[in-house]
Length: 471
Ligand code: TRP
Image (cartoon, rainbow, N blue to C red; front, side):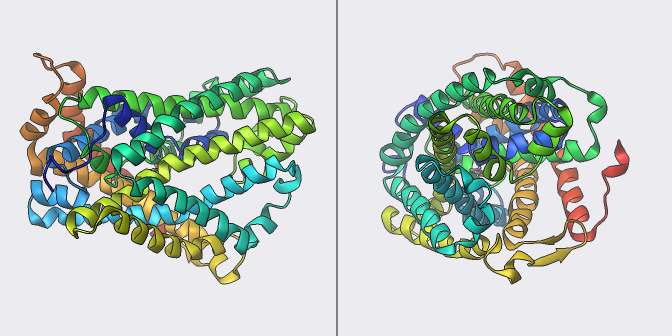
């Protein structure tokens, strides 16, 4: 497709909002706080911030540059820049998009379902979480609704769909987060929560925390599967890529940070400030869906309804701008490579991914054989959804990031990459960030992401912990 006919983001801010929308998602508001809870608080936060800026930011610049240069989806982009042998990297990205979106929509469906329950004042839903996830008709409908909304936006294209949705949803999301943070900080014992969250204790940094913090930063910034190659392909040549990537990174970590500022006061309020309690309550994936509704209830019926409804609406919005980006990757592939028209491509991809997600949906409670789907040497018995997560999030993303770095530095070549990031920068001199990105993409990212990929494979599939002894 030529530049002239390809739909583009209308403005720089439109692109930044859409890419930040991709980044800010369940990863920030659902996953980040419980990872912090389990990872000993501030030690995890620091490690996460460190990786976001040193390691993830350069990969983000590389993805956007590849996309803008080629004006194509990941498969077409890699094919057009490199050796044909590298095309598999594009396919790896499209496959990751399929898999991640298949279960992401399930959890997004829960968020939507909880929004409705809060609106109805049903605080008991936290205790009924098991029954809720076993109710496959309800589950199926909520995720269908979510997927249809996503497909509707994506089918309307870049400027008329994705950019327009991000322009409305992202500012709304920020207002909601800020309002909830301010409210949470007024709760009794809020400061005890903040202490757990922000007072660093570096002795708590272990190999395991480093590993988890890096995985979280990578997922949260939507890296490693070409989501930003795809969004980058709709970016104008007037945009300064390095600066845009910096703004997106800062936005994403800020929202995660604010999510923690809201969540830990809630937990401390519930545990009356007891640090051991804070860790126990906040440190699990069930935290938002099991514990939080009860905390909202204790605020009083009407106030709890307002806060609870606002919270789950926020969570749904955050998830929505992310599912849009996940769906756009395979859709763009179909449009560019298979020459399918956008509307047909979107609905075909969305329908297929919805079907692939059904086993994940049923694996949380409804179907026993999917619940105890597989037993692996590392993590033990896992359900189907966690297994797909292990393959796509934990394995494919760092592998994709590793390959994108190596591809950029050594196949596409640094000189071409550096030329592309200078387009639109309007700077005569090479700045510090550009120099850093150059070094990181050639050495730091390949090495660290290579280690992470190996650790993941050994740990999960062979039960060998090669990082445990390091610290
Ligand atoms: N970053 C999103 C989150 O934090 C999830 C997401 C959207 C994503 N698009 C992605 C993750 C692409 C990896 C790759 O929830």
